[in-house]
Amino acid sequence: MAWFTRQKSARPEGEPQEATHVRTEGLWLKCDSCRQIVWRKALDENLQVCPKCEFHFKIDAASRLRALFDDGKWEAFDHSLASTDPLDFVDQRPYKDRLASSKKATSLEDAVISAIGLLKGRRVHICSLELKFIGGSMGAVLGETITRAIERAIDLHIPLIIVSASGGARMQEGAVSLMQMAKISSALMLLDEARIPYISVLTDPTTGGVTASFAMLGDLNIAEPLALIGFAGPRVIEQTIRQKLPEGFQRSEFLLKHGFLDAIVKRPDLRDYIATALDFFCGPLP
Ligand SMILES: [Zn+2]
Image (cartoon, rainbow, N blue to C red):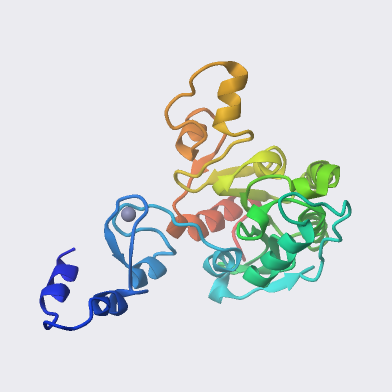
């Protein structure tokens, strides 16, 4: 805060009040967790993790891939698959409108990027979910894209990593979205039979049908700190079981303590962690 105070007192009398804001806009932001003022560049260099309190800000699917792949490079697959709106669904807005605005906001056709690239020299398939696309929800396109990625990982015999960030199944596609849980899970069984490792990375938030299917089916299920991970929301559970839920319920730390996760890994350590895990599963690179 001292920086701001200095700037303000240095402002000549009569200069418009907005000047201070204009000078600082975009350069600094307030951390959602520790409420301290953080230099945006320091946050960018730390993969959007607060340098003061290690709060993990949400990142988009492409930033995630840039952080994991060598030189931030990858080859994308199935990026032209798009939903056909099979139910012609309308809630508060037509589903077609939601799709159109999400496409515009993210430059993606659906809530996932399917990519192959090198991770510390090892060829891997990574699917990264995009929360900004209708809450990272799983419809037919996401299900098909991930299933194809699994089949490709089997064909090429390369490890699979799925980074989840999702509110669950896409209700605008009804039962079609729920079927994706079974479809992806069956494909993962084939991957398992082919003895190819699958690492699931759960980020804030991973809930609903995504948690209830592929996000919890990894050979390793690892999460970022303090990520919200669950199936139903806490209010629904409290009403169902008529009990108050414990502190920290549905956060990574609680789930690790109760055996639902294998590890909690901070985002800046994630690339190294996955590389080491793959060395363990597949043997070190020649
Ligand atoms: Zn912070």
